[in-house]
Image (tube, rainbow over all chains, first blue to last red; front, side):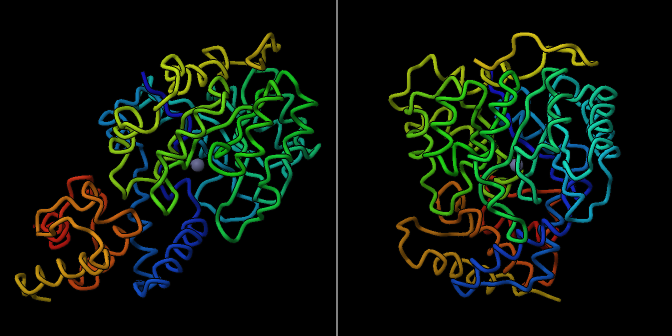
Length: 318
Length: 83
Ligand SMILES: [Zn+2]
């Protein structure tokens, strides 16, 4: 059984146009360097056309083709820095409908931004209970540290529901703030909330020297492999293999960051290479595969069904 | 816009060859799987689809077809031309 701990619905309902334009500008700069830059407007239109999977039907077809049983849908809150089509409540409702449309295929981590204050924390908790949300998704490059005390009310809500906190780290859209995306910024919060699980999104790809010792020495810090195939040089199987030989396989959660690879052969091509290729699991203890490809994720998810505020018991912080 | 398909075929094959700067030993023809054979990566696919749109004057409809590992010059062009 393969579980994907890091996906997004490829829809302009959830990804702000400004974010897509940032991605387009980076791609155009790379193409310009080799003398092939298309017109910006045409490229923006092309990327928007690739983000019309509003009900996740195409994602489910990709998962079926790739043998992925179930995936986490991440819903970042970009609302404080980029205009989006829907507010957080509407995005939560839409993801709930997606789950009803595709029963048993998705978990959902809902976004938040500490600048929405205590009211935002109460709204997050209400939405989490109403829609049985499974985790909190943070995007610190929007302009805050994941150890900002303003986040602590959100963390209390997560602790009460035994929900993990997924924190983006590393580079992102060029208009956002990179210093807030450094993994060491999690340290304060990880110490203040020892029974709350923090998953460093892209931690298996960016700043691995730092994320690896955080995962080794902080019992409640995990890494995610999201974006592993997004590097331009195509050498990702060897890098993933190095990651899986660091002695950390009880703390790494496999994730693709779909729709990142939709134009390079999709999830099936990616999973074929991960699962059946000669490189990724070379020299990795066989039993670790099940941990990496699903069991670690199941360990950090809240007890199902996640309905309302229970007190935290012994979680996955081990 | 009418398209001289044969001339366009030759031009697109040449485009893929020049994208690879003749480094690829794989023979390129209209039916070579571009991703599976490593002739294009995701950036190459973005560039190729953009070039197709420019040359045909038609937007590539991603809602009905997302290029997979078996996509070739022929399947991509046919899709772009709505065939
Ligand atoms: Zn992501």
